[in-house]
Length: 300
Image 1 (tube, rainbow, N blue to C red):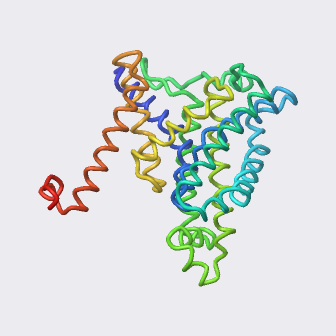
Image 2 (tube, one colour; image 1 turned 120 degrees about the vertical axis):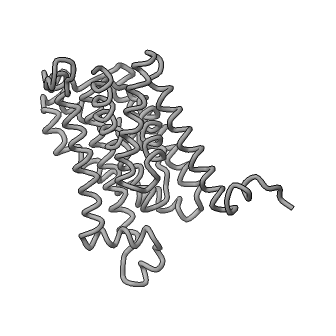
């Protein structure tokens, strides 16, 4: 029965990873940019929500109303002010740009709030740790269930948005071929800015939930970036439904790893990520070279 409980907890944890990875996958799918500042932007949202709760006594759930539009504006300005210019210089420059942004955000948050650990869990009371008792040994946490439901709703809503709205179809067309999209009247610059706003807003959503479920510091961003990147690679880069699957696989692997060995939480997740990555690379090589014989054949 304990394995069933661990499986449920792993799936719910995967919901958080999927929520965290959503913006990273979305930005890459539209603009082919791996945003190395993604985790730090999530922590920025967590810090803003903490400041609102600590200084003004605003509930973290109410803080969503103010923080998410603010993060959307940050994403829009990031695209218009930095990424748009760096994209013209090739693939490497956007990586360096977002890496530099990550360092600026981390150190800016350190100067603002210091290095102490913080959490929004005290501000949401019993909701942070209470749970439903399914059976005598199986419990489902309220907060974990809420995060999972939000992740499913967000990823599903984005898929519907991309499929059934004119702006969504414009985003898909621009992601496929921005030059051709421009020829049919789509403003690729505006589409990219909108996509960046959506991606950063979702990172902010994940950041606030992170602050509710555990402690964080201004330097917690790189760890969250690693989790998001692993979930995206496991599920398939640019795939929203795959992001949910990747997050769940990562969460279940970490949970079962911790059950086998207390130090296995992170190791199990990394092992699954590397195994999936290796499998994808081998599969790509096989397809490129025409089967396993071509993969291992010597070049003439």
